Image (cartoon, rainbow, N blue to C red; front, side, top):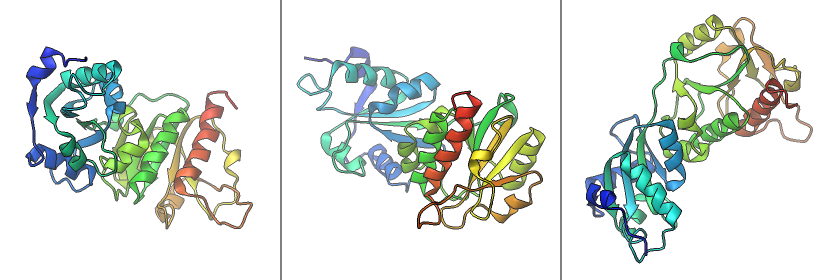
Length: 283
């Protein structure tokens, strides 16, 4: 039998399906939360150690009181993870399986939900190296695409991502989920277009545009130096203003079949890996 540690029991309070905190968690997962814009929610314990290792501010932890009871099915590892993340949380709520199902937006609700605060970044305080890979997310509308791009950028050894012409909340639950934590493990923030382009030029970034009107093959990009890859809107591509940026490099991924373009997430993955692996001397 696996008993909850005494400290966790004392810190927990019971919350029913009609508790406002349970309603807030559901609204977060449905992307309709009207409260603090800096908060995001993760469904599942997968995020616990990442959040702790990053030292993020953890607001609330919800856990299934039956699953984590002495008669429940939780493993020793799950109990350890819950205890660790709950110990760092401002508030810990013990909820029923019915409340977990109410919070979740999918079949087969998880047994833990974690609400944390997205880090804020000052571009001027970021540590810059000679060779870097940054992704600019320009006006994208689908949170799942943004999360997938962040995940690929992280996996390709990229350094951070910046959103401009924003159309999606940076804390959108589908964005957080599809990024598998990259949205809070690597710097990820928003900048207005004019400020962003001035900052990129001031810091010596080469701007690479993924652009269907380009003729240069994306494989011909030099991996040297500080590179900012611009990924555009799912339907309209990059904003026209990018083509006016001095020194920008429009590139295209050759289409060998009948389709004209790739999904922006997959296209960004190809470009990020091509540059990232060569910067690291792996290709």
